[in-house]
Length: 514
Image (cartoon, rainbow, N blue to C red; front, side, top):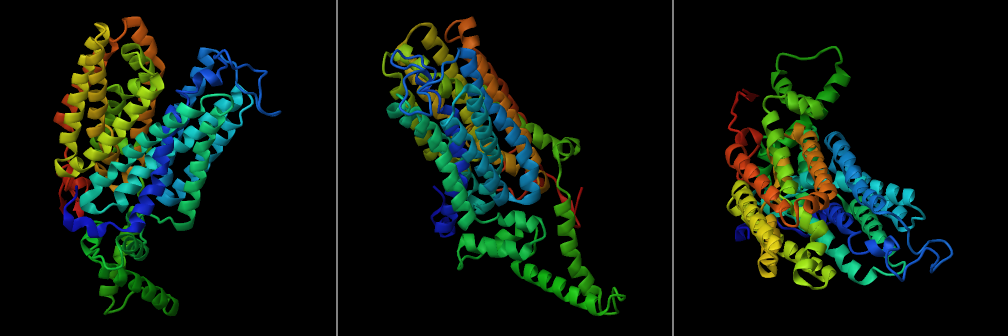
């Protein structure tokens, strides 16, 4: 846990903002797993479900569809997420974190509304795609927002909130699936996601707060100070945190605004006189807002971050770690663990899936302090090493029909993911780059993540069947070896670093970057 002396930064309003914003990642996990348990009911695949059996005059009890059609309904969510991830980065950089979170929650409410009231397959596909737009945007915006409102020395601890809430979403939908996968009750499972999105919109609209750091980076220093004070508490000393934004002190913020106001009054009285004999101090003071405005206008887009020699290595690092999160195989368990575990352990498949989701939540929550205590990079290496080792054990367990070895391997596999590859990639997306490149870098990272998610979801069953059960986990072990080597060699540690320049060992002379 964080040091006892840091608890004064924990205020009710901070937790309010954390929980309401993190409902976005919760919905991502929710929609990712919501079709697993009720699949047979939705497709009219159970003997007791037919297209003519209805409980209302409007909605059919189920929708007859082929396996490819159901695969389309499942995977279209990831394509919507990809588009949401790509477009939300520039939007959150330009317009702010709060407005883009509100917009994403609108899509997150509309999509489930269509899916829950679906009358046919095209309507179902459209609803899932729109839900993906909202979820994809949330996975870009929320990690940035949490990193910017969390206390400086606890960013890793609070940054784990994203992955914890994703796991909570998976657990929630699987629990609902245990009881509602019958008749038309599957529509409730789909509709609950929309209700959560509506609640999120209301909470953010009524009492949300823009990121203080975004305000400061966009030349609104006074508003930034007030926002930060509100989050930290009225008695908190925010001087050091303000300096971390590149502003000398809180007093400089206030002097800066006073200078701007006095400068406007002076210009209205003497429009033709830009300076006087004793005007030098005013010119110097007014240069700070000018630099802030210049920085605010310097938002970097998708291609610009790749063209910058300072930012390109960070983009490569973040994208690779995001690929590692998926290509080490976690979604082979999350999405297909039911069939794997039921064949091996001869137990209720849905209940086993719930137990795995519970373990994921527990491990991710318990391991959250490690990110700040031992660092981001060690957590990643432990996580990747554990998943690679577990993959080999799981492959042998499945190939040789050893239930105990297979079950233990699955549990170790999920636990290893929760230690590092679950929470850390979302942190690195905002810690490895400067503020003007965070949005675009986050979008590149999440785009890679969504594409890898789609690849695993679409091709894991085919490859597993083609190679023979279990052998696909040797491929995941190979990916773990590759990504582990890349992390050890290329990815820098960000714990305790003030900004991206310090992370990458760059220095500033006279306020200018080398």
